[in-house]
Length: 197
Image 1 (cartoon, rainbow, N blue to C red):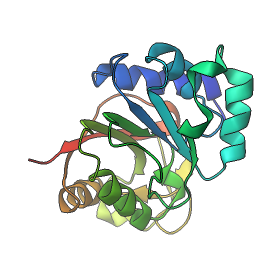
Image 2: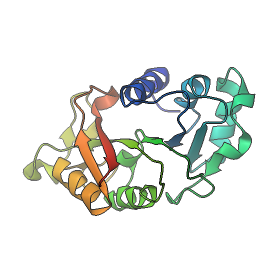
Image 3: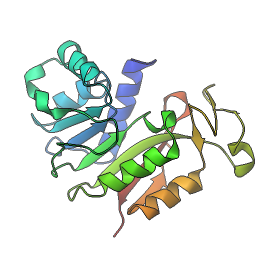
Image 4: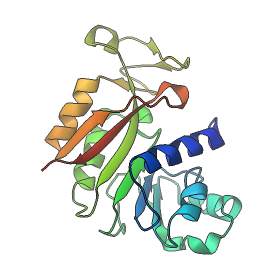
């Protein structure tokens, strides 16, 4: 689903490894779709250490059947239908979570809900998520052409946000977030968040 499927999956895996993901860790892939990351992460992680959520469980099941070298490494109950970022059935052992190319399609309130609910996971060390940014308040209300050509908007999808708004929402919901300089497909910007102490 979507463009640059393999390239994006490789980029996701690379940023997770850079964030310290090890085979023994437990990963939550938010908005997993047809497992563009899952087909790489399931092979890397210890069996049963990958969980995925998406608004369509059917797409995840199709990805499990078509994209995984060994589907038995990913239990069916680790593919969880979740449209509201409440993470039902996701266990408290999750150490890393990623939401890649999810929030550009949703209003900022959904980002706040996700960050709030993820803060309840006691073992979660790192949360990685992507957004599009507008460079300043003047341009935030206007259509803005990202460096990779995608036009983003303040009031319709794909949305752009201000970096300071993201950092404030992170603080408000119990996270310390910083912007990465990693170049990502389509001009998305990566934020890495850790629980605020």
